[in-house]
Image: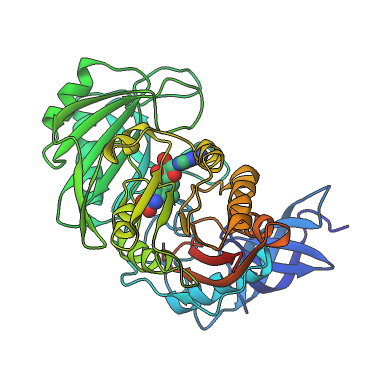
Length: 433
Ligand SMILES: C[S@@+](CC[C@H](N)C(=O)[O-])C[C@H]1O[C@@H](n2cnc3c(N)ncnc32)[C@H](O)[C@@H]1O
């Protein structure tokens, strides 16, 4: 048993998906935030799991630094956990991601494809509102807490987003808008969701606990967003999307260029956080692993429909599925879950030749995988999955390949959010071939 509050010298072996360095101490995996593979560090053990061979330590001293260590470029590094890997160079980050995929999730990739930009790449950014009336602040939750860490001058957000966040803080403070306090249920403004299109335009969604004319005053006073919408989220959860949405000022959607298409994204619509990397991943996603019939294709979790449009150039018929009503309406389809869509499609004896799926972080899950396996048993089927969550992708791949009749043909990883542990993955499978 490791004694708490005891210092040790450890050799850091890897970076984990939660951002921390990992070292071994007598068979116990010790998480040490702020450390890098290859470093010898002096740490203090502060907590140990009773149920798992895991412990948590704080860094006292780096005795031997990694050659890849560098000064973190952001003053909030360590307080804001968003860019946990900023203190190492991007090449070492990608190698750590490749190794993390193998160690933690059993996913083997030859490389992690670099992002065209390492800074200012994020076009969709969500901020938590905190501070107090007259001094409202935007940021993120500190790790394992609901205290606010500042994200002012965020270096990975597109500069137009950082500017719009700064303006929002200033104007909302001047108008004495009260930040929502989850402990008392008092206050109004909970979150801000800012989307950019890379051409200097931003769309702002104000998420509030209750609606009020003050939100219109705020929307009118803000000069930088080309459109502002208000969404009421009055539940106790951390959910961003509320149920009541209203347009407050300017345009109702922002137009984003993706894969050579002009796509319109509304106030609550999904926008890939890093469209430049998403474009690389989309190209892989749209390429079946095997030659397929050009009759029918499905686009599951279609979002704003970029892949739907691209698939229509290759297939005679493309059926899109999307559960969020705002996005489904833009695609001119009825909002439906992939679970229900596939059950109906199977009942109608449809035989798609190619299925593209880009599920949310939770992945596709057992029901969707079972339906896809049933499709694959009926005839040749190519299935490509794009995922931002290695854990859920790994579980879906197991469901599809162990008993589901699919064969994994290729797996590629893309550096979707440099400075962070996040990756985007594209798996290409085939069945019944
Ligand atoms: C990661 S996004 C991908 C969107 C789109 N393919 C893109 O690349 O922009 C996941 C999408 O799945 C939708 N979604 C979430 N759960 C779903 C479900 N059970 N069935 C269908 N769509 C779902 C979300 O609203 C979101 O638009």
